[in-house]
Structure formats: C-alpha cells, structure tokens
Image (cartoon, rainbow, N blue to C red):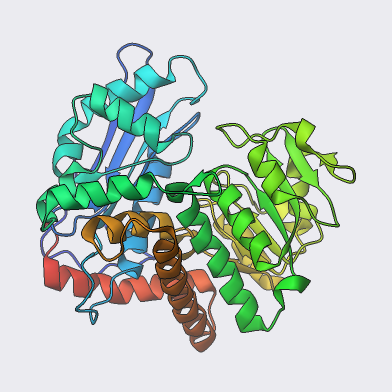
Amino acid sequence: MTTPTSPTAPTVSPAAPPAPLISLTWTDHVTGRQGHLVVDRLVRGVSSGGLRMRPGCTLDEVAGLARGMTMKEALHFDADDAQARYIPLGGAKGGIDCDPRDPEAYGVLVRYLRAVRPYIENVWTTGEDLGLTQDIVDRAAAEAGLVSSIQAVYPLLDDETAARQRLADAFAVEVDGIGLDELVGGCGVAESALAALDRAGVAYTEARVSVQGLGTMGGATARFLARAGLKVVAVADVKGTIANPAGLDVETLLAGRDAYGTVDRGALRDGDQELPADAWLTQEAEVLVPAAVSYAVDATNQARISARWIVEAANMPVLPEAEALLAERGITVLPDVVVNSGTNAWWWWTLFGDIGADAEEAFSHTRRSMRALIGRMLARAEADGSTPRAAAHALVAERLPVMAERFGWYR
C-alpha cells in the first residue's frame, strides 16, 4: 500500500507526523515470513535508511525507524553551509521478520530485495542495520539483480564513477583490524557522550561505562570511549553480561567476538565476572550505552538504573514512558536520532566528496559534526527547559519546512 501526501502538506510536527509516503508489507511465498518497507519522506527524490533483520520485526517498528531517519537527515542539514556537497536525503527503513541466524535467512533476504527492487532502483538507498552486515546486503543485492543498494542516489552525484570508487576505497580501510565502516558510528556515539561529559565538567577518567551489545556500534563505541580514558566496566551480549569494576580489557574482548558480537568467554581475564543478561543496566556507571536492540529500557527496568546519562547507540532503545520516568529522576537520555546518526552521514560525506577515503579525516569530520549537533541540542534543551529528545524534535521541526521549500516534497 502506498500513501502519498499532498504537495502542500502541513508543517511537520513531531507530535503529529504525517503519514509516510510509502508503506508496504511483503510476504515471502516460500517461507511465509514478512518484510516491510517504509519511505517516510523524499528529498530530491531519494530517501536513506538501513535494512534490518530480526525476529518479530513489525511494520510499526519500521515506520518509527523511517521517521527517525527523516529526523537524522534533517539534523545534518545546514542551510547556510554553501560548501557542503552532501545535501541530506529523506528518511526510510526496511525490516524483515526473521532471525538472521536461521538457515533460510539469506534466501528470504534475496527474495525481499527482488520484491522491493523498483524502490531501491529509484527512491530508497539502503545498507546494513541490525542483524545484517554490509557484505551480506551487497551480496544479496547483486543476486537480486541490483547494481547497488544505494543506486537511487547515483543520479545526484557529479561524478558517479569517482564517487563509487571513493566509497569502495573507504570501505576497504581498516583501523587496528576493524573496518572504517564499522567504526565511524561508534566514533559518533562516543563523541556524543564525551560532549555531554565536557558540558557537565566531568573528567573522562572519572567516568565509568556499561554497554549493551558488542556488535558493530557497541564495539566501536566501547573502543573509542576506552581510548578516551573512560573505564568500561560492563558489556552485554546474547550470552549475558561481562563485568569488572576495575575495568574490562576492551581490545581483548573485541578480538574475541564473533560476527554477531558474541564474546568468546575464553578471552576473559581474572576479575572479569559473568552476570545475567540484564545486569548491564544496574552497573555502577555514569554512562549507559544501549547499543543492541530496540525497547531495551522500559517503565519497569528503568527503576534499576542509577547512571547519569543514557546514550542511545541503538535505535529506539528507551521507551517513551521510561524516558519520562528517567527524566524525573534526573537521568538524561541522549536520543538516537542525534547520537547514532554518524554512520549514515559518513556514507554520504564520503560518497558526495566532503571527505575522502581516510580514517583520520572521517573521524575528525564525525567528531566535529556530532559535537556540534550535541551542543545545539543540549543548548536548546536548556533554553526550552525540555529533554534533549524534545529539543532535537524542535530542531527538526524548524529544518524540515526549510528543506521542503528548497527541495519540494518529492524531488
């Protein structure tokens, strides 16, 4: 089902967002599993948002993520920066209700991509998200007959051949054994946390961190925070929580994880403890980083949290009612629409040529951009007497009409 909005649609309000431009559910004729696609908004005819695969993924979940992508793109739009080559796109998201470890998962992915191929060819640029790696997405996209998972953006490039080579070169860059594409998102999350600590006058060496998830985003975040001087006291994966109040050896844990972010327990040191899966929530730490799944913090388990900041590396990990209760207790949630927007932005900074295929250039640009975004959001929250999420929504509500006026609703 597609639901077009009027070219004269009203100003976007976070309280009452318009219906998405495209919303559809696909059913696999082989397994009966379902996949979803939501294009929330187009800018210059194109939208951006990853494809996730997890059991229980729903259309409502994908719609919320697509709206979040619209916000992330808008937050990186600077109407006054005439030098920027990357002009943010619209927001979209895809999701498949299937366990990525299921033997049938890859076939389901290929058939899903074949079914939504016209959208990827024309309006939806996508890539890895929860449960999928970019290598798997690329391989399945090729098998589905696609040129690329981001081919819809190619007509907007000044030099498509050079741009595609630049992005390919960037994906080939490794830093200490981990791909640059896996690191930039965590760099952005870490810089968001560091900016909040700086604003509060908290020394990095005095801050402890607990991370849920040691996959692409959580692992990179843990690495950057540890290297900045913070003490990572707990990490959680599907097997449980690994904790050490004296600090974990993050590099050893990263080296001992599998493709799904599960740590080999043989890598643990003396003093490292194995605790239940939800123990990451209750660790004595100043910063919690949920970097694994959506809806991890609810109205019940939030009462067990004593951290000062929750930094949302995952998409939608803190439920709204939980966030309201946390705010009442003086716990600040730095929202996903800002915190984890670095990976998406890095793709486009690189493809459009704002940065080259260089790790230090990527990290420097990411740190500068994320620190500026966090600063604007927290300053707005302070001025409005609101939460950081409400402040981020207010910034988006100001920028979307400017984007609509400049680029139109569809192209």
